[in-house]
Image (cartoon, one colour):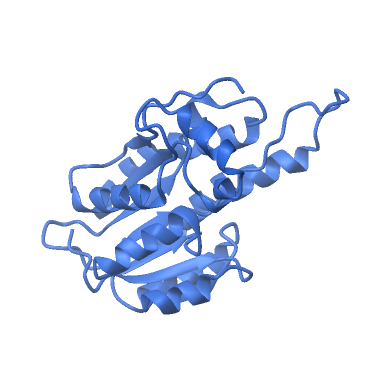
Length: 253
């Protein structure tokens, strides 16, 4: 798919995987709309990339609909990438053996899973009305799961459930949106060099990287971004979740 001059929307685009993806999409000629929280560096990133910024909570239908409309105003919306998410640890039982607050579980599910679904729903409604390309392809939606969807660790029940849900809904949504020429895909990253991990001591980062079979290092955000572009480019790729993890399989803790 040629995305030069087309619109691309990236949630969580002010940092980490989203920022790397926004940069790659802009380099490919797309007009990138950054969607992130008002407190983020989204406006600065958008200015750097010659795109636009929409401050929005991904769980709010009206805010996301407005962000999608803003993105589509710059060109046909062809690419949507869901990178917004949180990953706080939370065990089922706390140190005293009491259940952790249910609100903690619900918050992670709401942002990571419900937020991703909300963006897909609002964006696909616009993409479905977009003029198709010569091959009938209207666009691509890429979401972010995690290897925790498949081998979650102790302390990750909510995170694993949220990312497992992102993986699980990929195929049914791809099947539904096939009639509109919209492809739906998911990436399940392993241990990536995000701002959160880069804040750890170097020894801790090295230790995490050594857990990866090969290459023995943290994944780089640009490697995620390049996979997004490969998914956009390959028109036969649809309904699939691809692990990007250096062959790691997470231990229980």
